[in-house]
Image (cartoon, rainbow, N blue to C red; front, side, top):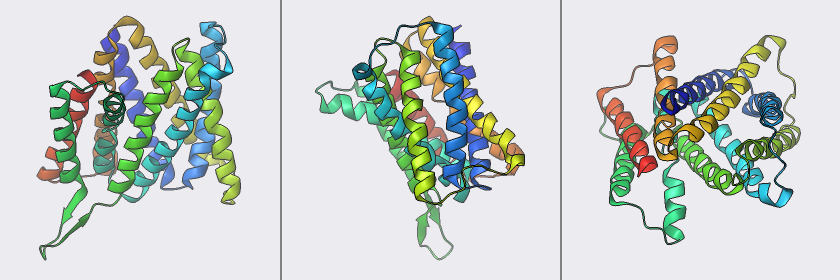
Length: 277
């Protein structure tokens, strides 16, 4: 059951990210974030009410609230990366997020397992292969969106750290705190940049779907952790870029060269190893 829930969550995140990338190619990223996060917030509070968990207290949820802002920044970088670059390049680089909790553990004196260092090496190698675009003249350049994908990975990794610190009492309330913090920040960002708050009516179904898939994936991930080991669930959930890459291949006609396909495989393998380590 845990494996099925985790895989379903990965599918949801992958579809949500793909749709977010599509929306970011048509609308301002801030608008995509604001509307989809607001929709997700409604879904999260339905989850909280259904779970009937007691309110843990404001102080206990502060790390989760901070995590929500960091995740918003990560999503913004991811969607912008999808808008200017190939999803098949950006998505697997963003999957390097588990390296951040690993670095935090190391800084706190909790030494990683040797196999996790192998995972880090695979991730770095994969990122290099994905990020570098060779040219016929022998010079190369960083692939479009690769830098933003790294920013997204850092944001998502810090989100995991903050959510873990804020979910000791209730995972549902921690996710709700994260979303409650992210929506006002997205609103302020929209106002500060004079971005239109309301998208065209024809885009609303797409933005609602982004929020629904993202929220559904969060619920599935949380449910999966109650049935199985968090390490195994994290590994399966980290496969979400595979869905994004597959949809980009099938629907957008993205084609990656052999080297970049190998880089994507290495990055995803490394992320899985770090997560399970």
